[in-house]
Length: 173
Image (cartoon, rainbow, N blue to C red; front, top):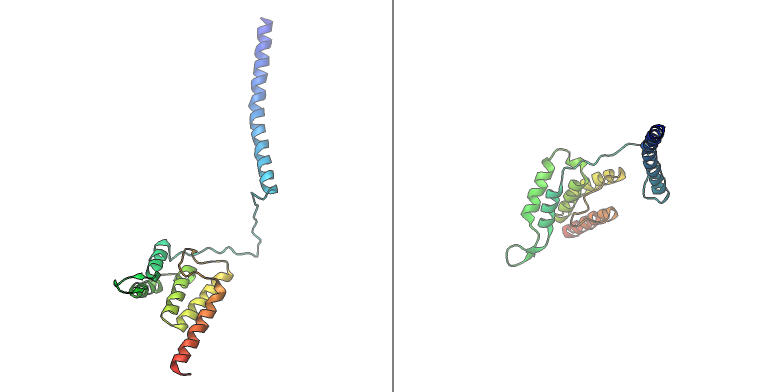
């Protein structure tokens, strides 16, 4: 009888030890995983400094608009005779974007407006869009990378310069 009592005590002690050992082992493994992740660069700890601002990307021109733009800007046989861009669709898309709220805060909208202005040889509109794109770019807010004609920002001004020099040449200046 004494042995049964001692056996019960030993079993209870084992169960009590297992009850504490299993969670402790899990915690140790989790801490080890975090330390290893940080050490090998798979986990990064990011802190916000008091002087930093977090820029949230305002999405007005979503994937559907990007898709419509890409389709309209794609050279293909539209009238059965010549390969061309869908000029009417581009004009309609431009009008639609211009009336959308916060389109001036969306780099994707502004990039579409920029390339539309370049296509229609409207240097002022292109420059306005470029100014907004540059401001957003400096805040680390970028256009959708799925845009057709997506180029590096430093080439945008060259396109405006080429456009204005071509317009001056056409006018005989």
